Image 1: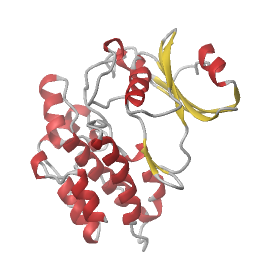
Image 2: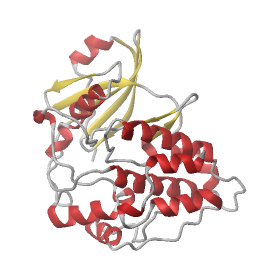
Image 3: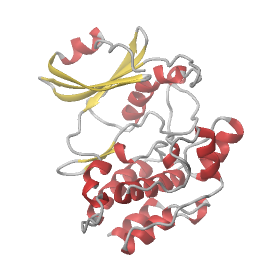
Image 4: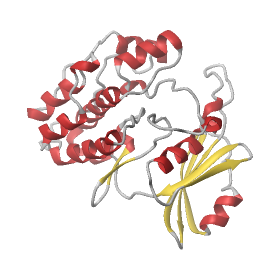
Length: 278
């Protein structure tokens, strides 16, 4: 149910003067373009509220997510950022990063009877991108394979709309209600089940990175539940620690297993993960 594709807001067109634009995503609450202009290549995001349906509750926060992400990126000192409001919600633009995401890059590893092993240098690039964010005192809150872009020179960590760690204007802020459950740490799942909200942490990011590396290398989720299980059932499985064994060979497998520890205090820090991979 993506609905009609919104046009780029006139304020974005005026700022970027696009010479070409390509629709990348048009889904519930979010539209993303790749835009080329004389200033360079940009990702442009629009947010709008999700209306309630028989299967989904209303999600007004999706309208605020692009501006919240823009504010986070500005606080982190990233250049080439702008954000603001349009008639249905908020928008931002930010530099476009070229390259496959982690899941796509490791697709050959997941083929049946493949002899190709996940390369630790790729994992290290993801660790370094997350470590850079953690060093600035932030937690990402939505770590998943699609958010690591493996570029020719470095790996970029994207989609920071849910990040916590510094001031965000209150009119663009909203509570954290969890993320994609495949990558949600047990303590996050428990909190969301109990109160409807949680607080992103760096330890939860470590769990999510471990789950991201695991599913990208093997195709298996960290926690076992039916593919069509309701979200609450998924979260209950995560909260109860119904974990699959990690079947990634060698030291990378041992490291992922530690990152997926049920208790946050038992997980390595991002510095320790980086040191192990180095």
